[in-house]
Amino acid sequence: EKGGYASFMLKEIAEQPKAVADTLLGRIDASGSLTLDEVRISAAELREMDKVVIVACGTAFHAGLIAKYAIEHWTRIPCEVELASEFRYRDPILDQQTLVIAISQSGETMDTLMALRHAREQGSKVLAICNTNGSTIPRESDAVLYTHAGPEVAVASTKAFLTQLVACYLVALYLGQVRGTKWGDEIRAVIRDLARIGGAVERVLGTMEPVRELARSLAGKDTVLFLGRHVGYPVALEGALKLKELAYMHAEGFAAGELKHGPIALIEEGLPVVVVVPSPRGRSVLHDKIVSNIQEIRARGARTIVIAEEGDEAVVPYADHLVRIPVTPTLLQPLVATVPLQVFACELATARGNEVDQPRNLAKSVTVE
Ligand code: F6R
Image 1 (cartoon, rainbow, N blue to C red):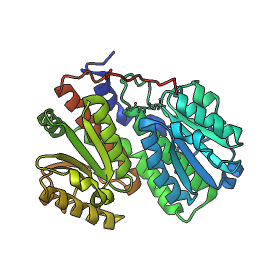
Image 2: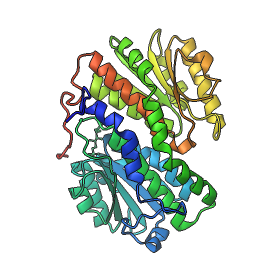
Image 3: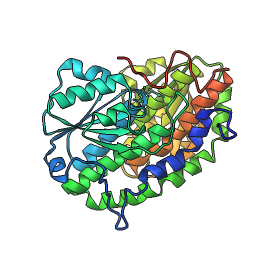
Image 4: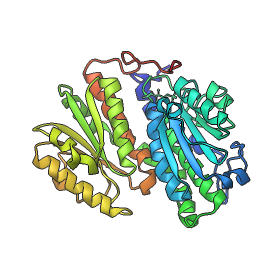
């Protein structure tokens, strides 16, 4: 059933272009608008929402963190993202004007289920983003947008994550479309870019051999750090989570702007640091700041592994290893930037002799709180 791949994880990483395309299928009409009929919360209700709250765990939480950037930018509705396990215990402020989005691959995660039950008890509408038809979370929600990743067997989430991102973008763009924002032209352009993004993921997958080689060379290390900014920050968190769960290594993701507030003290000779670089176009200030960060850590001995857009020449002098990703709109970059981190973690774990499909101590679906 692994279709010739050494593990389900490798197979599922390879399936990502299709998973992304399948999740878009039938949701963009011929005129380039979104049709999300399945979202049974009416356009009128969606126009009334004054806050979005996203609840999820683990990798799905990282998708939620990225969704926040998209939702707030395209809709101007304030959006909070919270770990489902923390949510209900702090008596969150919720009402009928709060749209709660619960993200879950399995649809059975108890923390997420308890969070959504709490939200519904307070009168909020819950939209589930879920990969498993008929599972508990969508059944208990007011509406559901299914991701079409297909069954995910490996414990570590890969293709489900990319499709969760696609679903989050669809929700953000749909909210923008329904409510009408000044970003109308940008929204139409992004919908066109989204329709092509599977091809970009495919291209990344075709260039992963140097990343595998690099990962194998780091098998003896104890720690890897990950830095990112803007949507690259949750990507850094996701890269670190993959490495923890698969390679059993100490891995941490930081917002690059936080470096000087503490984490830079960790930098020592030979420490591998993966940096997710924002596009030099668009929010170019952030790009320039992160290039300075790369310079700073390299001057202190870090071995820099730089993930940067094709054509970004500014990073070249400071990258010990350079991983190229296709040019994408800023908010969509996580769809391509995450892929090398998945491959990196999978290969490093394999080089350390770990079983990537069944990491120790972990279960695919966590049905206890
Ligand atoms: C990480 C991973 C977990 C899950 C988390 C939520 O690779 O698989 O962190 O993302 O347990 O699971 P779902 O999405 O099923 O609610």
